[in-house]
Length: 296
Image 1: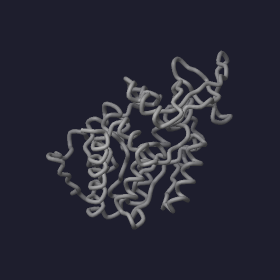
Image 2: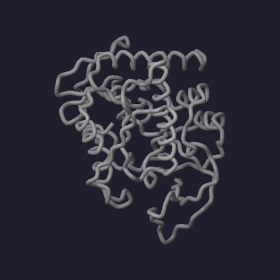
Image 3: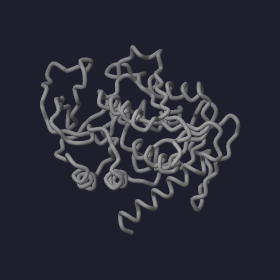
């Protein structure tokens, strides 16, 4: 199958999932992280419901530690497409610092998400997670049942034979729906190239002031970044394969300044893009544990 045919098949599947699940929903929402997968999912949602506007809001969990370019991009896209965007922050954790507070991820991401879902009483939550990202997500169903408290039990999920999805749930349950489950990182980039989807400039390589720690590069995004005594600021050509809170998100040395360059570079990569997320390397805050507790 050619890459163009594969992308058409993946697009059709995702649009079908969006339409079918929406018809079974009471109060749906789409999580918007501002990253490449969210940008693709937003594009698919716009296609799925065209010529109408997207019939549900978007939700962004703002930790106040995102890259400045991400927030600027979020606001631009909201205005461009006239999106109904809900921005939610856990006010109880605004003084936490991801560089030193171990409960930062739990408070500012997991609890913030759960609180927002409870506040607005959303029943179906769309997300851009893919099965190829890391181990716990490879276990995930396209339609993932979450129990009361938004807890995930991988052993208590519905079978998905022949791509038939069951959107039934109990009153105490919610559903996380992942239309991009069967996409890979390369599929995402090829689709972005094919559809000319706007993405944050941080994905493209350019000279940036950064600190090298091991083989990873951290962008000095503002004066809250703590530089160690033995560290020196370098101006290197780097880019990011994944985006999140800037002190916890490592860039890679790269010369990939165009989408074609990124596709070529991605085809040569042997590790997941989430290897650049420090929280995924922390066993106490692993993705598996975060998902069980209610994170996406």
